[in-house]
Image (tube, rainbow, N blue to C red):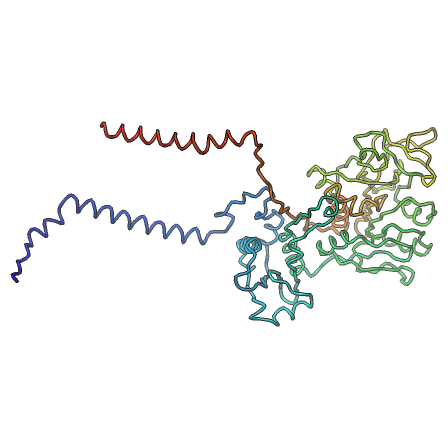
Length: 484
């Protein structure tokens, strides 16, 4: 076989051709584009999730509130969130939430702990039943366990009437509350008074207080010489009998020294002169009877004693008014405010009826809900906030005149606003500026329903008209270019 000697000149010449130069430019351009793409991906991957991901959910499922952002970004102590999750079973919503928390502070880190690999890890923090995708938040010696079933809360209250249940995502509220708990050693202590037939706080109120990191304890003044010094506030919830004279004196001494009291009362025929004397000292007293509302826009339809009062301006009520919420108060009494208050004493009417309201005495023996001659005419205050500057600080009292407003079925009718009112009052009395007021986010699916009459029209537009328009536009552009 004869080998031909390579033509070096021809080879060198091929590198100078127009085709080679064009190919070289394309290759170089492709390399530059790939390098830029890699660099952009690296930079974007290092950016916070808030910068690179947009929350398009109607409830803001993946967005963090300003309260969370301020609290977490200001962390000075190192907080560790342990994600108890088995491999390949991660909840994507929880994972996204944790990523956004991490982006807020270098002092917050997330560690995954597979309970199969580390079966005894959680025992040092909790004795509760462990569930996959639960969390443990730690800081120093303090810790809190967040169950998966506290993150996803299912409401079955309407199941037997509608056949459906609703699920909400409460991850942000639970996690922010846990961070506040483990990083805050000075948590408020609130005592609930016992010994007078008081009703037990509904679970929505006690659980809400716990989520606000308020420590609740029971207190019997019958066994005490005074209100405990560590009491940030007292709660008297729907007493059925009067306090004693000694308890009255202890309560007044506590309040006159800058104490705080959240009082919730119900209509009763049992006289309570000692408790009335405490409230009279602060310029308030009960109007006799149950309040009815004559203005149909201020009560539930068909129930003139299910009151929808006007909401006054105060730190306690402003969040409700700003959010457009209602407060629902069934079977409430009116509060009369004295025209002659002690110097330095302020009484703010939080919730008020209209001038068309009236109070019916002897409510247990009513013959009619309509207004009659002799009924006490409104308007009435149904809730007040009392403040007084004293030598020991500032006295704070909140008085609401029905506990029925905190029944689950009543509270549900106003989307939990009654519970929010109670917790706001508690935070105001405890002087907590960083209270946790983050609502759970609805996970119900929203559907786009297209009427059957529109189906044919939209099918013609999407399946025929639009594709045909693109084909004709392409053909026009092609023909135009070939004629050039």
